[in-house]
Image 1 (tube, rainbow, N blue to C red):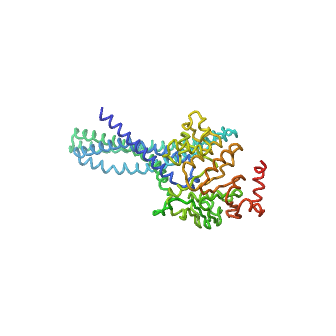
Image 2 (image 1 turned 30 degrees about the vertical axis):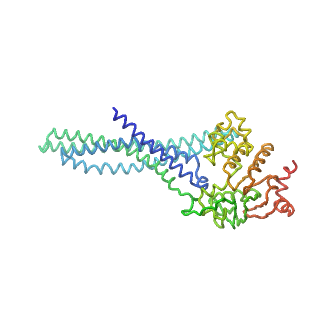
Image 3 (image 1 turned 45 degrees about the vertical axis):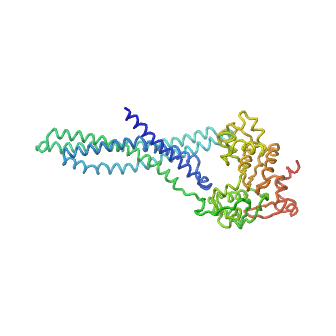
Length: 511
């Protein structure tokens, strides 16, 4: 009893351990892949591979492996006893093994293919569900619930049909294995009976041989059933292998160049040309050149699609330019270690990502070792301490998956607190106040002004107050810098900036 309990525990422990390590390795690998990968791969499909595919492998690595080993030992033992009992009949059985095994291997490939198809259809259904549930407010606001439910139902039915095909193939595989085993034993009995009739074998020895043959047949049937499970898991393993085989488009060089210490915060773009991988014939940047001196604030303005956010994407090295160079503190971005490069920058995006956890956890997201007092000081600097203390559990207040319990202004101040805590020499502000009301904007603006002191700041700006306080303004259009100067200088030129100011900044100036 103790041995059985120990076997059960350790066999299942092995399966769970293998799956836990596999999921960890897959997540670590995916986390290193760049934005280009996530643009072409749906998050729901990735979740399917992390969960459903790895679960398929768990049984093979655990209980099925134990059963297979036990059955193989029984099969080998039975064959040995059969050989001892009758060499001739055993050789006959061994000759029949290829005729039994080869059809099973061939049919197992079909099970593997159908299993892969079933996992793909399940991933498609999961992706659709994740997409719609993550945008539940939009779905409900447009009365799309029934349409989405019907669509998901169709996807689920497709996945069910694929699973039926896989189960049918596995059933046929099992039946085929049993038939071949029974046919082999029947053939052995026929030859054994003939041997008994001619007196070369006794009835007792034939009965003994048949008993061992039954043991061998049962063990072989068990192995063939497990082979069906292996073929099914192979489809999931193929999907995971494909995912693990994806190489990151962006990675640290083998021999990175060290960034200078202490950091200066200098940024330089030298004739940079870039097109996104999904749109190679539509260049986003066409020969951008500028230099941000240490401590300088540069505002970047321009119409939608001018390439403003792409500058940040290249600075953070989410992508590499097709031509030209991006340099940070005199070192080409592609020559520096990724972690060192990104450690020199703090990003405050327009759409702030908050994660399930406490407010303190979200603030220390970029500085996980920071203590609570450092978190509080960062929140004070970000004009966030007051509203955080007013929450039921203060800094230990838990947020939802998307931080939906906080307003837009509060979310922005959490993002600013992150940047304060990271204390990076280069600050990237991506239209951080464009979607806020006047009161929230004023609080966020004050927090940003404190954050910008002593840092090189690049800000994608829509608001007059931010632009006026910048040391320089870069005006972009169609991937080029078409104007450069201070607010007053650009207004006096009556060019694109003056037109943008008239259209976008007049209302703010009037207030």
